[in-house]
Image (cartoon, rainbow, N blue to C red):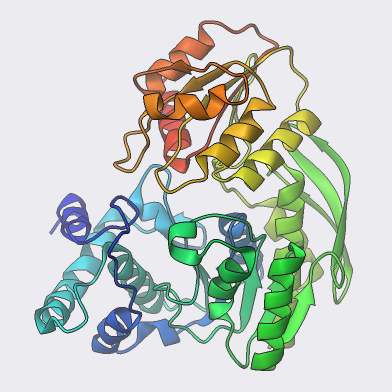
Amino acid sequence: MNYQEALDYVLKFADYERLPRSGIVWDIKRIERLLARLDNPQNYARSVHVAGTKGKGSTSAMIASILHNAGYKVGLYTSPHLLSYTERIRVDAQPVAEADWAKLVEIIQPHVEAENALGDLGELTTFEIFTAMAFLHFQRVKADYQVLEVGLGGRLDATNVIQPQVCVLTSISFDHMDVLGDTLAKIAGEKCGIIKPGASVVSAPQFPEAMEVIERVCQEKGVHLVKVGEDVTWERLGFNQEGQSFRVKGLKGEYKLRIALLGLHQLENAADAVAAVELLKEKGAKISSQNIVAGLAKVDWPGRLQVLRKKPWVVVDGAHNAYSMQRLREALADYFKYDKMKLILGFGADKDIPGMAAEAAKMTGDIILVASKHPRAVKAEALVAAFKKHGVTPRLAESVKDAMQLALGEVGPNDLIVAAGSIFVIAEVMAYFKRE
């Protein structure tokens, strides 16, 4: 079996990143039984579990980078990917090789078939199989730590089969409301499902409704809660378009840091990561202040307020709900000086399109709408009305490539082009510039 054959096999199952979620039966027992057939590889490495609405991928990458700098072999499991499915399973920042991916599928395939043949819990999903592959890979390479980003929610997510040493809850806002609930309290409750007795918990600053749930669950489970913004604080010292410097006052020390990632929200994510590794130190990890400094300096997490080109500026960002679109608007005003802005936007079917349109309309009236190639992308024509409510008449493009060529043909060297709204739109923009 080669890589493409292996990928085709896994993608033939129900993939709820690409298909409608109506009628889905969430049952964590499916992956638990699959992992039992594989001798429970999820229990091999020490674990950090990261849930939240925004920033969980960046925070996971930061924690993994610090642990790697401290000399540990570190597995990192994230989703979705930008350009290749192999990006989802990394060891020491390197994506799994295609040959190793194929080998993992070969090992897992008979167990998947045997489990599905039972039929009592329904068929394993694509994401559940990916997750089992990650655990198996981290065991096979003898990882010391595994840092796991929740796919969706937390309580019923396929990653929620571990006993974490540290749980991190990044910023919680409205997203996936069809599955997680229509209030912040309900959404926070689902995400708090990763909290288990014996773990320590880090929470980013939260809306009061979400923080109340986090505090209650931590009290019920008898776990130590560290609040970023209160117990751990940060302040920005300086920035340019190549990165930013800042200071974090942690639980165990004060650190002067620099990261290549832009946006005040990334400083919050970095403070979350610092708090998490300080808690790991309490549980026996040997991590120095220099490991924290050097680990964060080396973090590379593409697609998040990332500059692809200068003169004109071309920036991509994975803002995919109203709150993150607001943060993007604030960050662009803070970090960039430009004459005119063009905004290329595309959205997924389960997103808060009215909320994102309202925030985007505050940035510029020059908006180009497009649908990515992703099966759940909303057609550009269906988005127009949401923007017209805010006095913006957007233009439409047939493809992301057409949208980018249209924008580039109209801007001067001091202008700014931003692509956002869907990780799949920005992935296609990045692929466009890679080809160019």
